[in-house]
Image (cartoon, rainbow, N blue to C red):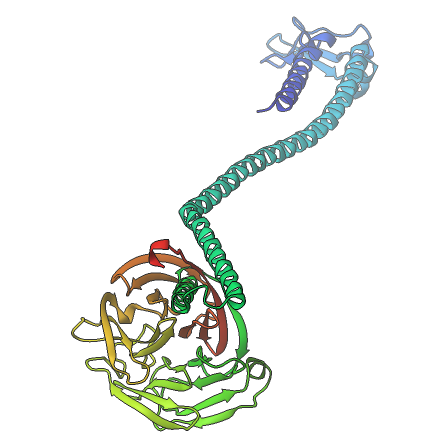
Length: 485
């Protein structure tokens, strides 16, 4: 108990002792403990121990006396008046003391009530102080935990940035290489200027060879700069909300300058109508479109538009069709041998997504699964004209476990799901026939992705997310080495 409570307890104990002392001492002060009036067993008055007042009116009086036949004395006694105590000085003193005691008792009672009230107040304050102490401890612990979380977050960021140090060093070397290209171009420009003044000073064929060589090296440099390893995906930008839960939309990465048409295909089966919008602005703001009717319904959402043609999987088959959108004719059909179809090896969300066609900086691809590869993902590079398989890679990743997939610079990236929390966590590099598990956050804003494709021209991911057409920017790291040029 706290110090205020101990003080109150001492006060109450002292008051109790005072009251007890007064109850035991007051009678002795007025002589009540020495005066006793009792009757003898024979009916006579016993005066041996009684103390009677001197005034006969205030004492017992003999009214008459006689003797019985046996010689015993018989007395008639008159009792004193009932008011004799009021004329007794000690009785007055006793009454005065009793009044004082009553006054003191009332004071003690008032003090007790106040003390009890103060005690309740102190107990309440004690509880409040304990509560404040507990809250201060919680705030202190929360502050420590917050600092620990901040430190952990900073450490995690540092761990993420540390591998980029050698990449930045490579970029420094790349910058020097670009400066070398710039110096060579300036030298060639100077030579050409001099050649205009003095024809024949240099061998034309040798000069042409130097220009061609530099042009090839610059083209290779630009191609390397366009490709890289995926390191980040931005938050989505919602372009439009339309259509059903499943579908696909895209632009042509090989479309000529000024051709910004958008292609839109709602649903994943039993549909053969493709919408054409004149531009992204028209697609976002209007419903003005041109409709193209395909010769066969498509299957899944893995269609692509590439160099003026749409490539799609014919419904309930492993046949791939190349359809020219300008002439509206079939240019080529080919069976993708051993590929599962009709929901045999679909993505995790279903929807007849057995065969997924993709494009990247290197051309046209097909992603599917076969019995021969135990239902795991197979990647095939296709000739965009003949649809022949140029090369195939067998992975160990189950197709049914993949949420969606896309290809960037020859690397297949796979998401771990299609609904709820999603991330890119598997990558297969076709240029090295190797794979790795990664962890790239991917915001699944509308909780159901049924189409995800990369456009190398826009360097963006096109997605169909639960009836919303969205775009994601991607971040790529690329390293140029001088021995590759």
